[in-house]
Image 1: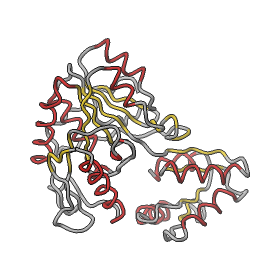
Image 2: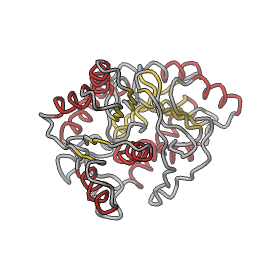
Image 3: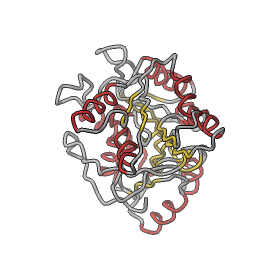
Length: 328
């Protein structure tokens, strides 16, 4: 993410100051060393790491200092709103890539095996910790049971929780214990309201920040996991009956970054793609990043667009077959 922001700024002749997330500063610092090795002059690429306690103060300085001409931020909607207020005082230009709450709709006409493969890639890459990861699965009544059964089987057989340096690992730890606690909170809330744990549902034996890939069924729109972005390896499935119902549920969120749906009905594909209130739509596709497609959201998911490189599919998930993304 840093290279996407910094590359464009340097190409335009600007200097940059990078404030990495408090939990993940090492890649930003490593890029600083690479910048030195590449001969980029001192002071052109700058990194300001800080502790969690200092983050708010550092962010305020960067957003209010008149020497800063532009703010580009990737993070939560709540933090983005704060930075927008700070930037308003000096009328800075801003780019905001904020929170998502991506729906993944599977219609009766879908190829279920292909939908399961897409669901696996969309939900569980980086252990569910990306802004475009699916957060809500909406599955039509006619194929609901079949999809849940095959999805659970794929989770158990194809996902491996473990050390990230192990080539067989597909699921690493969550970023910190607070993230794990949020996943637990969402699961406990859903189960208390009648949801069923199909697979997973608890911390992994590897350590406190590892969590089992989890699938829930009998989920309703009143549960926290369908109202908030979990940002973890939790897949809640909601059963729906009509296309109109699915669209209404998908669009009920106040954010709209990415959305996905599976259908083999051409007329339905055009209708649903046009009606989803998200910045990017994946049709029969679980990963939407593509070099031809500007990346960004609508509603409270942000302002502006970024360009991203095509992401190669993970060859460890042999069932995943990429296709050309439709209307993004």
